[in-house]
Structures are given as C-alpha cells and as structure tokens.
Length: 138
Image (cartoon, rainbow, N blue to C red; front, top):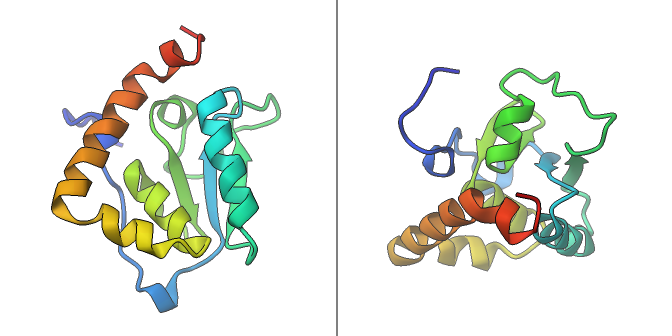
C-alpha cells in the first residue's frame, strides 16, 4: 500500500456492495485488549443473529495477518474488515456495514447524512489517535 498523507481514519478502501448482494460474512478485525473496542464488538455479537459478521481479535498472540492488504500495524491504527470476496473496508465504513449486517441499517443510513458523516468521521479520527491513552495503554 502506498503512503497516503491522509490519516488512516479518513481513508476508506471500499467497493460499494448493494444491500442485496453483500458478500457475507464480513470479517471484522478488532483489538480485544481495548476495552472500548471489545465493548462495541460484544454488542455487535449480541445482535449478530444471522451470523453475517465474524470477529477476529488481532491482539491474540495466535493471530498472524496473512490476508493481502492487511498488516498488524495498520490494524492497530484503524478498524478493518474484509468481505468474503476479499474487499477490505476501513474506518467508519466498517461500523456502518456491521450495523447493516445486524439489522441496524437505520444507523448506517443516518450516519451517511452529510452532517452526521462529518461528525462521525472526525470523532472516529480523534478516537483512533487517543484510544491507547483513553484505555490506559499508552
């Protein structure tokens, strides 16, 4: 991946999928050592009744990023997910796709409105810069 001057939280690698043709499962990579991240994933697990989402804790010592386009350093900076067709998405778009996958599509639709999108992207960028401090790991 080429170096990009835009912070990772604003960089979205995504090919849009129509709602009817989403290539589930969506594999979500998360930091299980981050209490805030873990809380969000635990909530998604509760809603994941159709098993559209799979969760991979990259903080687990047995995890090795072998998928093309993924590496440990990038995973630690911003949330990543991979569709079953190999498409990788990052940042806020991962949350939107998780919400849609568990039946909370109204949250995704609201978050795409320009004012909410701008706030959400800025808030997530701030969180990614400060999550280790916020969780006492920095």
